[in-house]
Length: 362
Image (cartoon, rainbow, N blue to C red; front, side, top):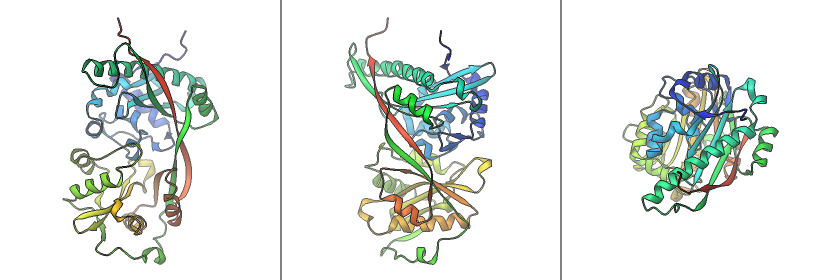
């Protein structure tokens, strides 16, 4: 008998799922548990740590719809819950990443139930659900004549996983389930009790480039700068006019702490910060994006953008700033350390392949 009967999420779980996230002080070590402004946000809490969605807190259905496109219609079918009377003891979230052959698996467990909800049970339920979802999606593409897979055959899809607590029990369960660590992300932080020093302000600015904050009408050059700066970034994320417009219209966008390097109408680089929406984290900002277009690199622009961003954050009343760094981007660490950032924790991403049976169901 299954001692951990996970089932699909439905709307009646909304209140209990919200309480679960409120009790989990830190979700995935990165995205904090927030109290949603309205019920539209709650089902998407399960996707808070999704990379790169995890770079922004308080995400709404409309924003996810603009990023995930047609996948949004299946969003709630990708959430599993472990109910216990009027509580939810655990939540598993599954998400296709650009294709039915690549998935993310995340989870959060009620803090008081962690010893009774083993990671093995979570992984078993999550992988089983991914296998079924992937098979259905791939059969659908086969019927439409698309090349992902042929009905009746076996194929494979990749699964990336992260959990709430990265302890020995979790790592052991991931390893026993066939996962291997493939990538790590460091969380760095800096207090803003002092402004950047005079020495930090003096490096020369590149000729013809002015640092300023974001203004109305900046969307086209900002989107161009982001998509160019991150064109070769792992994960392949990009902004569209629609998705960036939704973000700038949201309550967490503050143009006073979003800095651009204006090179005569085009943006050579961008440094985008946003406040935490958690009332318990008043004064905390997140440095979400630092990018420099390839043609403008090796001119200290990343350094100058961050110095200006730190100054703007302090002037606007923030007392601390955090950022997430891909540890493979080793060239960025000396820059962050030079500006006073120190590592707080490291989150590892695990990967494995699973077989998907495309035999038609009866």
